[in-house]
Length: 243
Image (cartoon, rainbow, N blue to C red; front, side, top):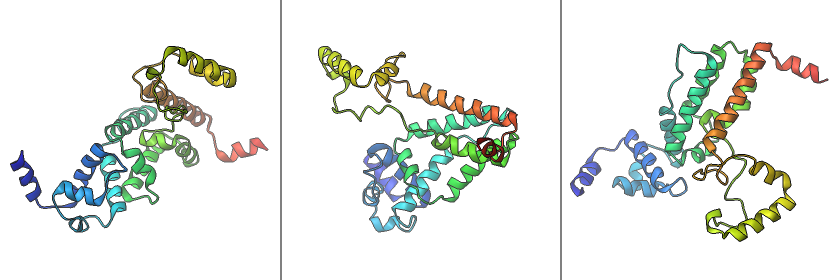
């Protein structure tokens, strides 16, 4: 093992190796703990050696996002636009799930790099190739938002409650009392939260099936886009109709 580590450290440093190491380090320690100094230690070099390949941490993060995009499958061919978009989004979601830091990195990018613009260009192209007007595609891209990258803001966040304890750590009597209090003050929330079966292993909400919820919303959007496309929708006419 020591010999392998030494051999790795003697391998000439280049941008690809720096980015690959940064992705692996972020996978291990998380987005917040990633730093140029820690990355240099991982590579067995002084921090200044990194700056020959990435100008700063912002450029490092840009490169990591580009690496993530490289893991997303290209658009499939010989199928309808809806299947093409759906498969691409779910591929992006799988890539995002492999790298827990990715969402924060994507959301932290204030300037769109060539890699991000290329991905957006390709994504818009799937709708245009399906016969969508530029007008409808503009609004579709707004509507699909973060789902283009495989994520969405979750409605129920299990970290937002008054206590960090998980439901399993709360005695049954206390859970019942808490639920009664919730039902009295927030009857609608309790009604929708208890109105469907839950997955106890889920990472979203208190047992919501996050993958199902993601695909449910994605399919609703795609069905809506299809209906507007078939109706020949335009934003100009929609604005006139509202007057």
